[in-house]
Length: 239
Image (tube, rainbow, N blue to C red; front, side, top):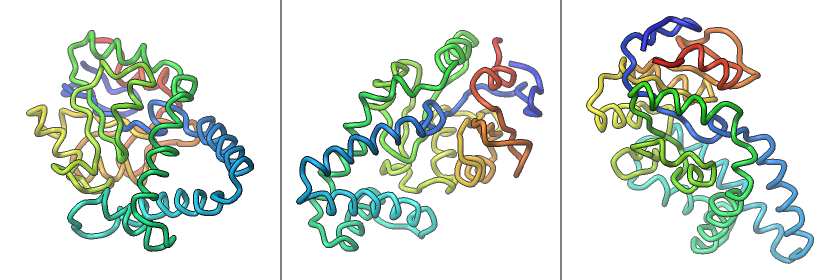
């Protein structure tokens, strides 16, 4: 692929690595749907409402805190364990609530939240012979299947995988993806939605990066921005 649209030199790109949450689908409509479902569950089961809400909020907060800690044995376990400690909820209950409300229940909404133009862009990239992969901070396979795009990606990596065990913006996940493909960092373009996480992590690992999102503007920190996947086609295009 060649070109410098949006200021990204795509002449050496041989692989495109995608973030998932907020990138391949819009998070706002999903959050609204899940907030309504959570409110309904709290009305139906008021006795467990406080515990459910406290666990989910604390788990998300711990996720952000763990972005900036040193090495720990298992990020996924530590996140759940610390959530249990802060909420005084047993670990098995924390894990069950997280699996239900963060991994399973959202799946039925995902296809309706998929960003416009995603499949077209992926088809173009695959036709051009580029490698496609995913690097997410949360388990991605089931979400990709719910989005109807799982067949496009290999590898599908999570930053809590044993081989990585480092949340973005730590560069280890990005470098691991490059190693899996046998490509140099400058040959892999990363596409994400959070400048402070995706953009910073890609830059630290030496990957060019595009940030997708209508609220993003300009060229900040060495990455470019695109309002959505139709604009991203200017960067990626057809071969």
